[in-house]
Length: 303
Ligand code: CP
Image 1 (cartoon, rainbow, N blue to C red):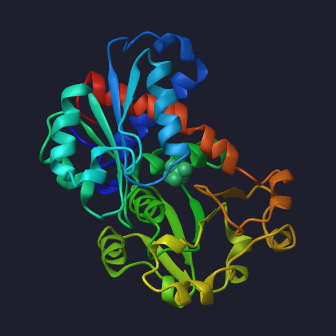
Image 2: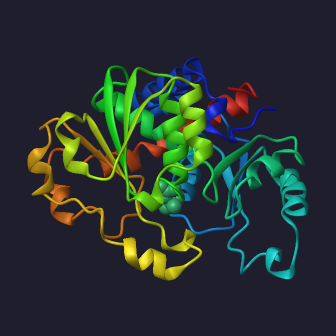
C-alpha cells in the first residue's frame, strides 16, 4: 500500500490526477456515494483539529464508509503511556486507512513503517501537511490557475507545515514563490534547500507591501503559539503580520486571499466580505479533495 507522508512524493501527474478526480466528485458527488460501503477510516489525532478531522470524516461518509476515532490523547490509551507504534499497529486492524496527526515531525513516516494500510499524514509537528496542500492547490487552480502564478506565502514559514508542503508541491508548476515573514520565522534551511534543488523561483521578503501588487494569491498563515519553545519570542512577533481591507488596497482585484485556518488575528474579519476572501471556500474544498484522495488510496493503493 502507498502512504501520503510528504508533498515531495507527489509528482505533477499525481497532483493533477487527484485534482481532476476532486473536480469530477465536486460536480457529481452522487456518482461515488456508495463506492466504499465497507470501508472504515481511522482518525488518530494526537493534536487538535477541526477542518482536517471533520472533512476526512465527511469525505469517507460521502463515499459510503465510516470512521473509527481514537478520540483525544486524554481519552485514549495514549494517556496510559501506549507508544505510537503500538497504537497504529492496533488501529490498522480496525480500519482500511489511517489518518494521523501528531506533534512530532516524522511521526507519520514512522507510523507507516509499522502498518500495511495507507497512512495519511494529517500534520506532523512543524513538518508536513500534504492533504492540506492538495486542497490548497485545488483552490488555487479553481480561482487563478496553477501556471504562470505569483504567490505570496506569509507568516510562520519556519514552523508552518502547510507552508512547507505547499511550497514543495508548487515546484511542479510554473510559479514564482514570494516568502514574507519576520527574520526569525523564515523558511527552515531544509525546505529552502529542497526548493533550490528543484529549481524553484523563490524570493524572501520581510515586507508584504513590496510584493503585494504583483500577487495572484496571498497565502496567509497563523503565527503558531504552540510551536514556539519560548513564549516571549512568540509575544515579540505576534500581531506583526496582519492584513485588513486597507492592506488590500494595494492588491489586484482578482487576488485570492487564502489561509489554511484557523486564524487568530492575521486576517481582519472585515476582509471576509471582500471578493478576494477565498479561505472558507478553501476549507470546504477539503471534502471533495479528500474524497478523491481516499478514492485513490482505497481503490488503487497508490497515487
Ligand atoms: N487547516 C487545518 O489543518 O486545520 P485544522 O487544524 O482545524 O485541522
